[in-house]
Image (cartoon, rainbow, N blue to C red; front, side):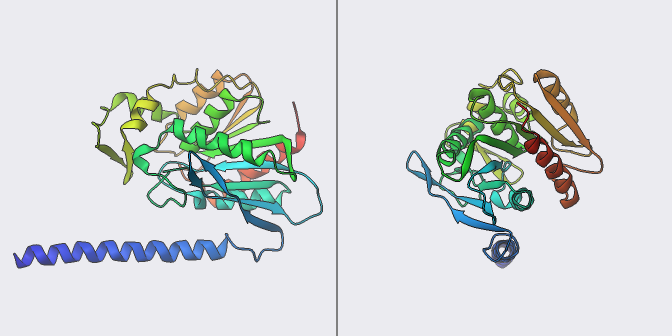
Length: 288
């Protein structure tokens, strides 16, 4: 009995310590990247809702005198939040473009937006993205004819789905380690019973995640977009095999693939810099 009590208290202490560590890291990230004390950009929260649920998002604009800016919307992957895209955002702004980072509804257990992970799927996240694009394109200081999507992992899949369903709404598509494997994952695993969920990477995939994932026809669902598609894939990615991106490049009408040496599923800061350099060149080219 005493041993069980000690074990329970130890587990509780570990959970508390992990929560404290997360809050400390969160605070450091906030004060390192997500603050108003930088002289090269200004930042504002946007109030965006879908189905009466609030989407947390931050718009960053370069600190110059331009009246309108090209916009890059940054979509995070499964089980993380907008903070995973902050470095991308700051580099995008330094190139003279507006950037928008946000949390999908129910996107992770560390979510700043409303919603529960049990109700989240790639199709619900596509609805979030549509609401975001529709809202931001109406802002006076955004060049509505030059809106670009950049997504990582599951966020890249969401961007691909949106671009295919609304091909005239964005200019070009940038996909980083796109997790097209998730479609196979939802078909190869049993659908959880009502009230149950699968734990993946310490995060939750509910019944809806699998039902919606099985509705997607791999590649056929993504390739209605005829604009430029730039795919970046780490050669050491252990989460999503490179073959998925190679097949996507062949499926798109106008796609390019960049195999990133010494990069895994999460891209290093130097790798992000290489990606944003290419993104900047492609945006500035304004090729139709």
